[in-house]
Length: 93
Image (cartoon, rainbow, N blue to C red; front, side):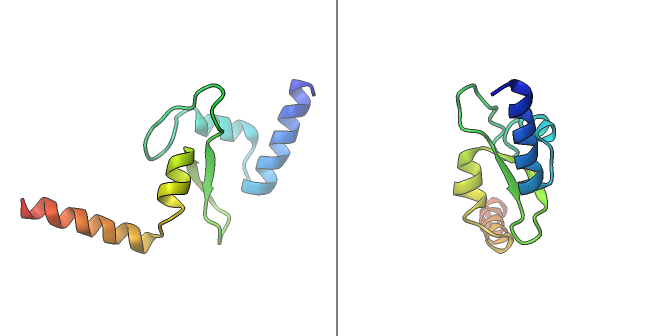
């Protein structure tokens, strides 16, 4: 498959699934994971396009670990509870 065909195929995939072009994905991915700031490496699994499954709105790019182990297991209510928990120990010390 030629490079142009591959890019066209990826463009179609990202546009249908996330509403962004492959170029936009690459632009977002070059900054690394939004949470842990890990940068992509050659031969590594592609970074995930994090999106709201209810609205389909794209939020950002996350590494595999942050997407599936952190964000994928939490919702905003849990994230707030964790924040409150950690903050309560900061204020106590």
